[in-house]
Length: 281
Ligand code: HXC
Image (tube, rainbow, N blue to C red; front, side, top):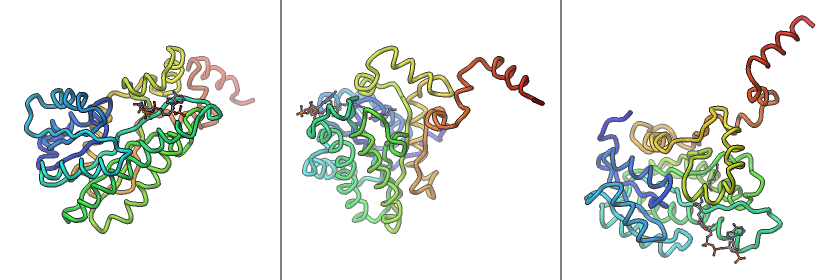
């Protein structure tokens, strides 16, 4: 889909790059020629991921950090800058989430999610953004949100509140940092199978089947589809896209809203027969 050198010469930093969608995006960025730095809480997981992204690779760098801790994030950003000479792209992908009835949440449970998703995104954006501004060569920030950032969702109140905050941050900085030639965009994925999300959010096969049935395209996303979108958005192929959120969910969220969308879940011949019978009445 892209030229092999689409991201050559760029350094991309991916938070939560050791697993799930972060790992898939990192693999894509590396394949397109970027220097890739991945960060996450577990050094062991990062080392394993680096081996998968580029065995023995020169252009991959790992540095553990917990995005909830700004001091660790600053150290990590400094180490990446030292290794590659600067950071051109930041992908805020690190997230945490679990299903809980809101009345059963503790303030600490709320904090565990919000500090990772919202504060963590702010910490990385601040540390890396300052370096981008200082270097004066622009940059690109890509935040991974979700479609319930604007609809909200039952049973994931901390995540929904945090992702809504990240979306607001994306749009705010798209304007504020345009003067520094730093673009800010977001991707809103629907369900893409990952170990982390599935363990936390798909407790039973019944819930998984229910989730799939809600998607008009009747399947979950494939990692490569999301990685291609991310590569495009952070690349020089998209220099005028700024402040946008691109949904990639097979039509899931919009499909849950339209008054007559439920008809698509009935056999089409039956629906058409009923519509035909109504004509002229
Ligand atoms: C209720 C819970 C809980 C649960 C943790 N807590 N899990 N409460 N139900 N299932 C509470 C604990 O009781 C504790 O509060 C507080 O949260 C902190 O718990 P810790 O275990 O100390 O937290 P910590 O290890 O810091 O992090 C927890 C976590 C983590 C953030 C949930 O496990 C994590 O990062 N998981 C990653 C999951 C993941 O990858 N998710 C993918 C997200 S995808 P108390 O009061 O007891 O001290 C996504 C997009 C969705 O979000 C889009 C779908 C379409």
